[in-house]
Amino acid sequence: MIRTTLIAVALMTGAAAFAQEATSDAWMSVTSTKSAAEVRAEAAQARRDGSLRVYGVGYIESLRSVRTRAEVRADLEAARQSGEFARLDAEATDPGAMPGAPVHMATRR
Figure 1: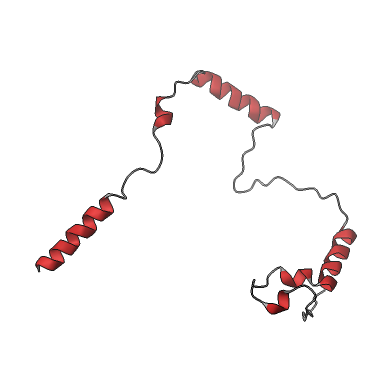
Figure 2 (figure 1 turned 45 degrees about the vertical axis):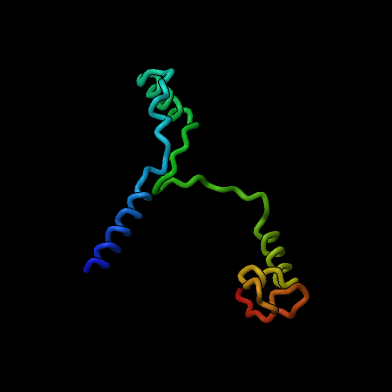
C-alpha cells in the first residue's frame, strides 16, 4: 500500500514539471502602434484589392503550369525507363531501388 502511494506521488510530481506553458508571454507586453480602426481599415482595403490571402474550405488558388501535358508525360515515361519512378516509393534498404537495378513494374495508361 505504501509502495503504491509512493509511486503515485512520484508520478504526479513528475507530471507537474511538464505542465508548464510552452509559449512565451512576451507578446502580451508589446504596445500597438495602430488603433483597432486603422487595422480594420487596412484589412478591408486588402480584401478589396486582393492582397489579403485567405485559405480555407472552398478557396484554393489555381496553379498554372508552364509545361504542356505532352512534356509532363514524356518526363514521366523517361523516369519510368530510367528507374527513377520506381525509386520514389522504395525503402532506403531496398536493393531493387539501387541505380542500374532492373525495374519490374506494371505500367498503367
